[in-house]
Length: 315
Image (cartoon, rainbow, N blue to C red; front, side, top):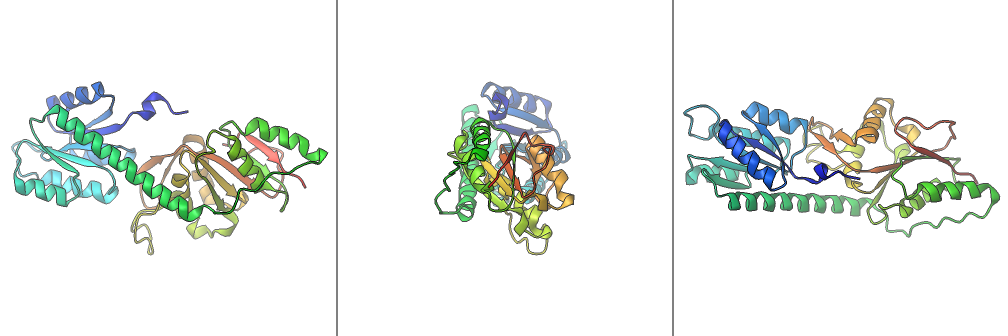
C-alpha cells in the first residue's frame, strides 16, 4: 500500500537565490507538493539522474549578473535528453519573447516571468503533471495492448485429493500482495495457478503481464524487463517501456524464471526488494508497484530472496 508521501507529487525547484527557493518551497508545501531544492545546473542534473520527479520548476540564470538565459537553456536541453516526458517550467526575471520561444522550442512546457502569480504557477504545474500522467498511462496501455493475449482466462479445475492443499494455499495467498514462486513439472498448470492468484488479488482489474524467460536471449532480456532509452545500443532508435513498467499497479508473471541470466539476477532481486530499477542505458531510477509471480519446472525446498511464498503445482 502506498503511503501518503508516495502519493504526493514531487517537484524539483531550481534557483540560485535562496529567498526564491524558500518562497516556492513554502507555496508548494502548502499545496501538498513534495519539493527538492537545487541551486545550480549540476545539482539539477544530479537530482534528475538520482530519482524520479513529476515536474521541474527552474530558473534560466544561475551566475550573478547573467541575464541571457543561456545557462538555463543548456540545462533544459540536458534534462530533455535524459527524460523527454518530464515537464519543465522555466522562470526568469529577464524575460523576452525570443527567450520564451527558444525555451519552448527546446522542450519547456511553459514560461513564467518573475515575480510570478501564485495561482497561475500552481495551475500550470498541476496541468503539466496531469498531462504527463495521462501520457504515461496512454503509453502503458498501448504497450499492454500489444502484449496481453485476447484469449479467455484459463479456468482452474482441480478435483484430486493431491490438489486440495494447493487450492487452500492459493485461496489464502491470492488476496495478498506476496511475491510467489510456482513450481512443478511441465503441463501441471503453473500459468493457470498464476492467473488464479492474480484474479483473487486486489490487482485483478489491473494487467497481468507475462514474460517467458525461457524464450528470451540474454542479449535482450534486460531490455524486455526494464526497457531502454534511445541510443542505449545499436538498434535502440527510440525509448522503450519495459515489462515492469507495463505491469505497474498490476502483476508480472515470470515463467521459467530459472533461465534468467546470472548477471541480471541481482537487478531482479533489487526490484523485488525495493521496486526500483533503471532502463538500459540510463542512470535514472524508476519506481514501480508490481506483484511478481514466477514459475519454474523444478520444485525447490526453499524460496529464493524476495519471494514470500511457494506453491508446488502437481498433476
